[in-house]
Length: 114
Image 1: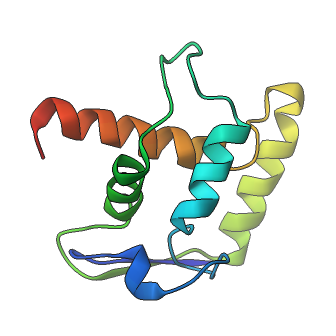
Image 2 (image 1 turned 180 degrees about the vertical axis):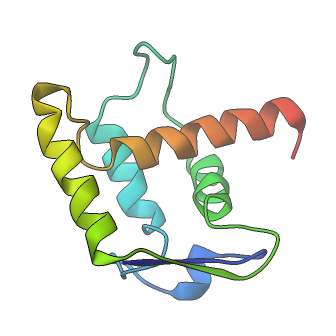
């Protein structure tokens, strides 16, 4: 597995509407995941974002001080998959962690005026 990061990462510049390995999830897909996960409250107080907030947060999850490629070994991916299987009913819903991180980042950006 691999993931691309860049100081000026812009999902729109990638120009994709489907998942491309290594790149951020397209904005519209993140919006759909957010709505399907009903993130309007919950234990973390995570709520839905306005679309422009979602776009900014989705881009920022792939921004780093320097251009970076994160490469994971097959053994690391397998270990993560086995760990998730072992969680049973506590296993998070697909894409929920990514969406929650984007929402938290957006809220943090508002607080610190980033």
